[in-house]
Amino acid sequence: MKKHTLSNLSLLMVLFLAIGFSACKKEDTTEPTPDPIPVVNQYEPWTQAEIDLIMSGEADEPMRILVTSNEEDSLFLTKQTIPIEPDANDPILIRLRERMIKTMIDGGGVGIAGPQVGISRALFWCKRFDLEDKPFQFIINPKILFYSVKMITFLYDGCLSIPDYTGPTATRRHSSIFVEYYTQDGIKEQNILEGTSSSNFTAVCFQHEYDHLQGILFPERLNVP
Ligand SMILES: [Zn+2]
Image 1 (tube, helix red, strand yellow):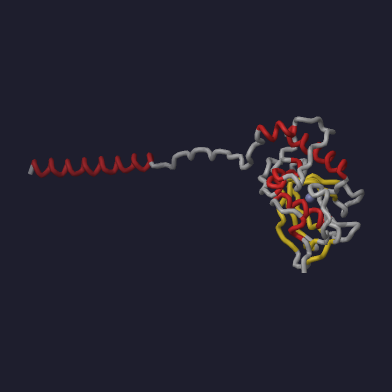
Image 2 (cartoon, rainbow, N blue to C red; image 1 turned 90 degrees about the vertical axis):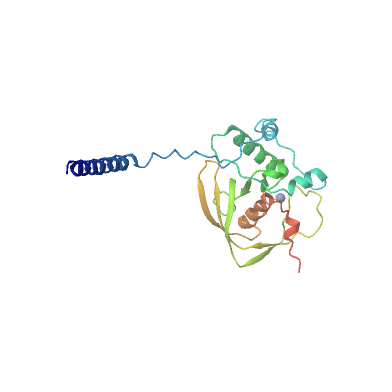
């Protein structure tokens, strides 16, 4: 009987300990604080070669335009570009922007893309014929989200990187595009661009410069029947 009593007591102790352990265990299984998610910069920083080239001249000093008649330049012009962080305060990006517009205006162009000055980054200058005063706009990391089904023939395409071109200049382009890009102030914008006439060809200009970022030159867009 005593033994039986002791046995019952032992059983109670075991149950008590089990319940107590279970309670303690429950408290211990609270969700651990997760590690903070590391911030990953999705943009590749400037290379030293890019910095050296961009900073080799003052803001008003034009850069050398790569031309297709030079074999090395020609290969560079067909490369796919990579994005750059659209940081409005980046002194490298500011200098590049300033030198590119100087290069473009000196060359008599209405647009110029990074690869044309030896910088394989997704950025370009493009004239906004559709806006009042027709300003030039610096475009960073552009995407063409939608293309119109309607196509047009633009008669007078041309490129600063193909200065001695004497072939046909009529290219086939989409009449309007829906685009997204960062401005020089680092603001993301979306826009419908149209304009395919000789006095307003914003959509064509954008498509031409956007092509440069994919390594495509306008002779590949010729309106060949
Ligand atoms: Zn061009």
